[in-house]
Amino acid sequence: MTMKKITTVAALALSLCLSTSVLTPIAAVNAADAPTSQQVVPKNGVATIHNAGTEGAPVMTLSNSSMNPAGHSLANNTQWQIFGTIDLNGTSYTNVGGNQWVNSMYVADAADTPAMTPASFVGRINYVPGYGVRLFQINGSTVTNTGRYLQHGTTWKVSGTITINGRGYTNLGGNQWVESQYIVNAADSSATDDSSLPNGTFAVISYAKGYGIAVWQQNSNGTFSVANHAPLTNGTRWAVHKKTTANGRTYYNLGGNQWIQADYAVVGRATGDALTLDVPYVSQYNPVFAPWGCAATAMSMLLGYDGVTIDKSFLTYAQDHLPMYPGNPGGQKGNVYTGAGFGWVIGPNALTDYAHNWDKKVVNVSGASTETIKQLVLTGHPVLYYGWSSYQNLKADTNRNHCKVILGYKDGQFLVHDPLYSNSSKTAGQGGTKELGYNNGYDQGAIYWSTMSKFNAEYNGQALSVNR
Image (cartoon, rainbow, N blue to C red; front, side):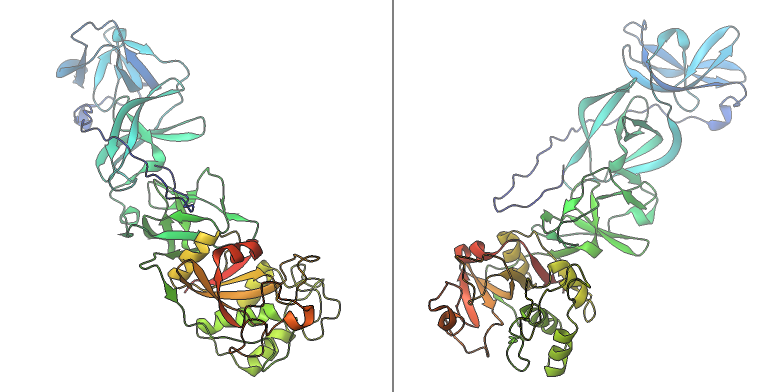
C-alpha cells in the first residue's frame, strides 16, 4: 500500500488480496553438525532445482563427514538461496541453509545473482493492519512476484538480505523474499508500533514554502534512515496510520514503511463539520497604528491563540522589529507605519521564522489546498493566509499583500479576522470602500464569513498555522 495523499475527492483505499498460504521453510538443523568454514567453498546466490523428477531433490544433513537423508526433498524447478558447496568422497553437495544439503547434480546456478548478506533473526512484517506485503522469488537479478502475501504483524525467520537494482530484499528461507522496507526485527522493542491512530487522521507537511520533507524508512534494528522517495511538498495532506518514537524523535506512518518526522507535520482528525476557535481579534490601527503592518498583526492573532500575551508593548516591538528587505531577502519592503518605499509584505518563510521568537509552534503550511485549510481549522489550527485588502484596486493590482486569519468553518464558509479595521465591530463597507469609491468585494468587515468562491479567488497558497 502506498502513501495516500488526500485530495478534495475521497481516495479509493488500496485493496490487497491476502493469501492464507503459509511459508514452508526448510526445517531447523543442529548447527553443531554443520561443516567448518574451511571445508565449505562459499557460494552465495539463488539456484534452481533441475533434473530431479517428480520426487524432487533429496535434502541431506551432514554428520561425521557423511551425508544422511533429512526425510524431505526440494521440488523440481523450484528456486532456493544457496550458501556454499562441499566435496565429500568425490561428490559435490550444495548448501541451502543451515545443515541442509542437496547433491549438486540437482542444482543449476542462476546467473548474475548478487551475494546475500547473512542474517539470523525473527522478523515481523511491518505494513498496515489488514493488509499484506508481496512475496517474491529471485532468479539472478530478476525479481518475480509469486502472487502470495504475508500479512502485517506476522513473524518469519530471516536468513539474509540482498540488494537488486538499489532495492533491498530479505530472505525468509529458500527462494522466498520480501522487500526489506516492510520487515523489522521482532525482538527489538524500538521497532514495535507505539500506537495506531484513528481512521481519518491526517498530517499536513509544514516546513517552508517551495520546499518538501524527506520520507523515512524504519530499519530492522528500529532506527530510521532516509528512504528512496521523492520529497513530500509543503502544504500537502496525507493519511496517517500510526506513530512511533525512535531515539527521542517521533515519526508518523503514511502507509507501509513510509514515515515522516513529526517536527514537520501538523496532525489532526476532524470530529465535526463546524468549529469556531478562540482567536483574539487584533487591529493594525489600534492600539498601534501600522497601516502597512498587517503581517505582524495577523501573526499576533496566531500567537494570542496559543497563549502569548498581546498588548501595546508587544505590538510595538513586533512592528518595530519586523524583518525588512533587503537585510532579510524574505522580509517586507516598505515602512509599516508610513508605507514609504512599500513593495510587498514579509513572505511566509520569513514570517514563520520571526514568529519563532515567541512561539516555536507556528508553522508554515504554504501550499495547502482550501480543503486542507478547512481540515486544519476543524482540528483546532487557525490559519493565517495572504490575500487581498479592501483598499486594493484589483483591476490594476492582484498581488497578495494582506494577511488575515481564518478561525472558523461552517456550512461552506470560513470565519475570518481582517486586521485592517480600527476595531472588531467594524462592518462591511467601513474599510477601503471610501478611499476607492467602491467596494472591491473584500471590504467585508473586521470579522466576517467568507464563501469558498470568494476565498479561492484571493488565496494563492501562502499560509501559516499553529501546531497546537
